[in-house]
Length: 443
Image (cartoon, rainbow, N blue to C red; front, side, top):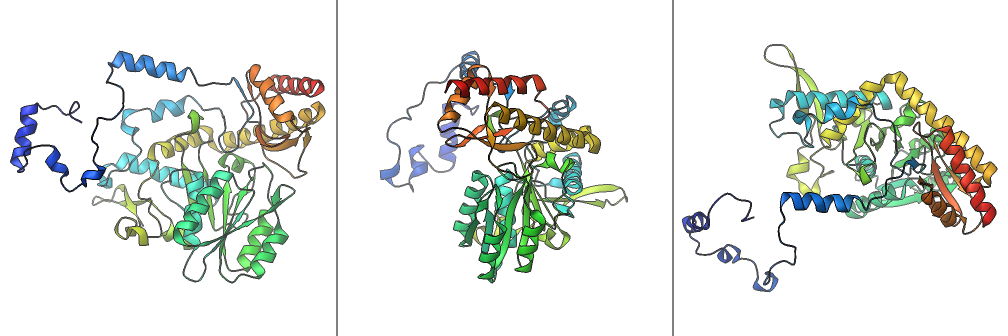
């Protein structure tokens, strides 16, 4: 840090002498000699601002930006009203954190409070926290909320995204909880397999599903919720927030906790982030929500004011014994979601969801005519899986890329997960189907 701290070598030595040290090496006397760095780090020399900007531009040019995107799988391209980046780029908001002396920052607290309110309206739940890192973390934290001394088995659907399953596995491993993955059947969670597993288990803590699921299919959420509730566990639904403009809310399906990734709410793809995970719960579980919750109160003059409330201080105090170690939130991303929802309104969100669904169904139809059959016969929102001849996926994707199209995500040999949003036009969908058709005829 020497080149970044504005003091001279003499001043640095004076500071060392004032604490009774003769050299910088003596500061590390408690570090074993065997692990100390003997030689300088093998990193390039420093560069000027102009050189760094030129280097970064060169790296950025290596990214492939597709003008036509038909891939989702957890990160989606949606229209973002111009007011969203205009508001969230204001200097007052550019922070991902809430100050520890939170009440001095009323504007930031209000923005989080409004975000929480909108998430509750969207999901039908009673309380929301100030957000967590991403959708996968939200699902894992929700499962942790449901565990107690007697109920330690976490059930999750295999039709959740692989990233979410991986994070839930990690959480369960760290806490010593038992994890059971329920298989899918014809693209949705196997209800019979779930009931069979629950019949042998008296320690069921929860079931977590996605609605719509990773394959785009709509789950029989009501029946799945009834099954886990009959076994004494809680029901967690991970949902796409845009779909809630059209589909039933998690509350209407009987969920105890609603989670998901807020990326579709005004956040660009941005090569993978930053995004945010939203969490909301019924009133009886509100005190178990991890992280921060902003509440509304009145100040000494009787005027509206905002405070941090119901924050589980055990997260900072108990450390490894705590039910959660999340002490922060994605404040800037949460603000982005709030501005997006405010700009869209309920009718705008409903229209966006309807366009996503109608365009995806049109895309499935013309891809089937081109030679890619739907793999599942389930209702879907805006994603679906197609099955083609063995070895066709790589050929199709390569041909599409040459034409500027990012095609569906390859799942297995011949299978592709496609997505359409309101951003996709009929002309580009027709062009995509024609490319696919020609590719299959030549293969």
